[in-house]
Image 1 (cartoon, rainbow, N blue to C red):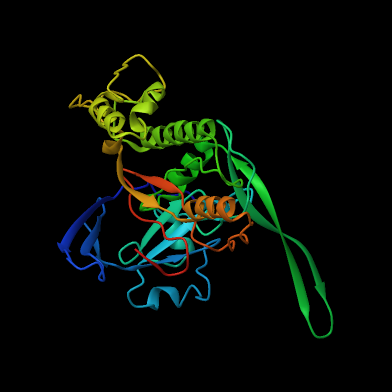
Image 2 (image 1 turned 90 degrees about the horizontal axis):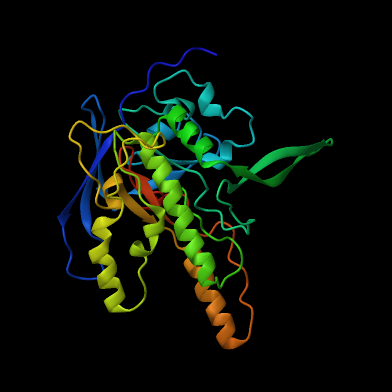
Length: 334
């Protein structure tokens, strides 16, 4: 395998609202800009479109057609679609932007984002653990051929991914935007308070690991025992107290802990976890599942299951230095 050039520094993003619409019948107009370390800027007017991909391919578009589609400058790649190979395909591309090269895209004209899970998948999955995140991948299991038809059978399997493996893949593939994994339950709702608390705690842990790996010398790590300050309660007084205490979250400095990054030149203390990320993604399927479960309780019936291609509803955070929005379905608007 050819040696890969040294990866460039992470890109930065800017988002500016250009026109606010008073009516609720129209979308807010804004400009999204991604600025690379060499000064190149890719600008998109929002609302805009994002194309999903699987194993380096956008459905219904060949690699030579994709760059020619006008207005389609953002492609999203789920990491789990590469799990079927022992060595993920982007790792075989000797380029500073392996994902771009794999899909035949130019970094000067296209943005590529990545998440661990496929946002369009709402299949029921085993529970995550503190050390492993459940993912789904397909392997070609069997093929048959006759005089008139060739049939192939795909077998879908569940796999486990360590958060550090995902971080390693992100580092190797050098995408523009990274979505931090979240501990979203993919078992039938409703969920207990204990499960919700565990989900928040794990999501914070994985976000911290991702942020620490790509932060430019950040000295802070969120104290996970303070996660309650980010989810203080349901009453207004509890939420207000949580907002006041939130400024203290992650303000514990440790220069001796080998698991924490080195001290920055400025010595700046991170007061809020929001400072380490560039934005959030709200996916809708788990919310739909929860509402459907509540409706089933009220009516005494079991609603039919959601289609497996429905937009999923997990809330993910973006890494600060490689940022933006993931779209679940083909050409979903941003």
